[in-house]
Length: 124
Image: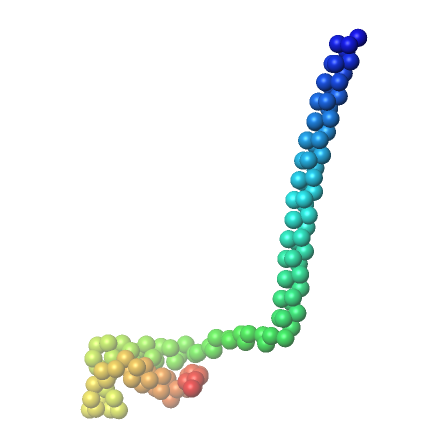
């Protein structure tokens, strides 16, 4: 009978240890869950604050591309080709040759405008 009592006490002790371990694990899990919950709340709070600030901030302007006519493009291409081959003169055929790429581009744009192409003015 004493042996059976000792066996039961050992089993009871093992059960008690197992319950204690299980309780400790549950406690750790609940602690981790609390941390995760706090982190989620913090993130939501930040999101709400950023939304409030967005209302007061001016929105960025969206710039649309201005469309140029294809006739103007072909005229500029022709002038740039002349510049590349050294055949482009400023003013008339007797004037000095154009040496600047920017100047050649300006001549091409002005000629295409004279031809009636829709090219927007230079922004200042």
